[in-house]
Length: 281
Image 1 (cartoon, helix red, strand yellow):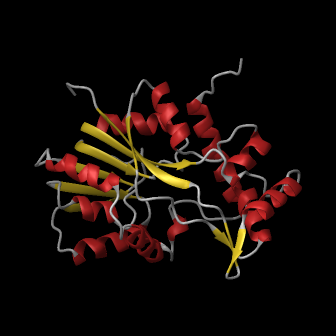
Image 2: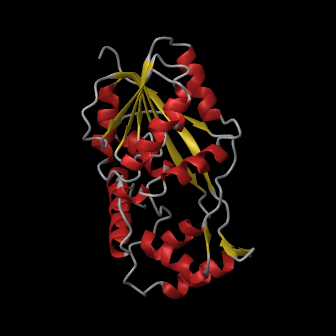
Image 3: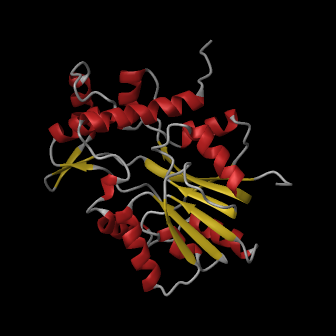
């Protein structure tokens, strides 16, 4: 019988493998990776948010049912969530470690004329933030190796509810096939499947709402060589050619060349994970 994974350890291993791969490829780690890219990131979010989705609708409806609450947005980026939820919360605190992101966030808050948004520079879980009624962490845990500490602090900071947004990768994706070959299991990165099981391991029985806005925009590369280099970085194989033949063949079979770009198959969407904290605090 196959052993049950230690999901907390698996999350840590995946985060640390990606960090080693970035270091070997000399790719900036957070928060420096967003220098010069924050405005481009904001524009990509605006395009994705042009259509409604179930996560935004669900959280907005929740806050409407609890008027006067405060919300902490962890990893707020350029402020899409903070600006949106400021309409429904009494006050929003937006936390992010990237000065470049926060510069754009402040511009967006000012452009909307919002007076109920505070902006803080800091990294989770180290940041010193007072309790809020609701804590939101949208795709911002992927670089945190200590999942347990991050989640325990989420729950300790929330007076009522915690929200996590995590990506779901299909089990037959290109990266899942590569992970099975390289690591013997289908998880190439920290994601919903690993995170949700880690929550269960912590005794947190969370609810899930699957986003209905469709699959994310696919990755693209200018060449198969570039795609292979990106994949090797993600698997901490920058200086290891052992799996090159398998990975290159996998990419050649599944990527499609469109207008000079090599396009990955679509296979990622989001899940909204939430739970209420225990009373009394």
